[in-house]
Length: 261
Image (tube, rainbow, N blue to C red; front, top):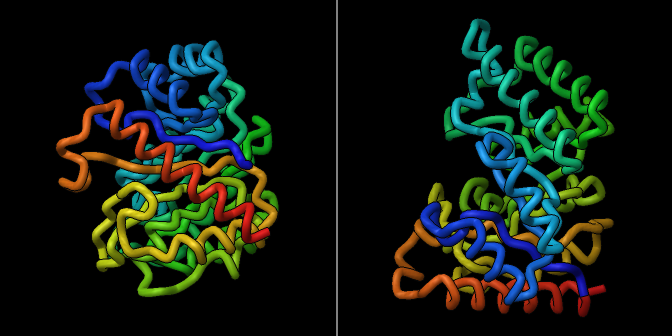
């Protein structure tokens, strides 16, 4: 069975890192990820390593990500944040940085300004030995461009985004051979409602998702990207209960992947 993982902070920011790590260990989580701008990243990576938990990737900042497509200082600042994410990964021996290419329904169109910035990002990633994994959001065009323009780039498949952002468009048949990171989450497939539920608690066809993973060359863990506060479904759960349910869902999905091979 594949390893299972869960994002740091899934229960809420108020849960101390030591308690998060203890709950992860108790429930068999062997991998995790965090934001590249986490101010405690160096300390957290050390604590995770000591507990036997691998930080499989980092998530680059995505607030103001649309700025990379516009001329001016804001775009350069966004690029600098992405490059700092690459360097944070390299410093902490984290192999992959997950990057969004747009945000929102009315995201800017692809243009030479943004492409030139992505060139610089990819050059820095190559220099640092870090893989950039571009994640599916609402727009297919910019993701397709990145996959075509940068053969060294990987794909991060967010199962929930596919269901609630793109009206049924499937990304794994397009980019499954490039997948290096997984964000497994559930929702009720309602447009623009990104709930980040535990798998099997929404309406996404998890058996199909498992088959897509099984058919791909994905070698990473079954990584949950779940956020308790994004809905009221888990308001009554203690941290111990939430982590236990998360692990049960992740193992169920991992089993489904193995059965689909």
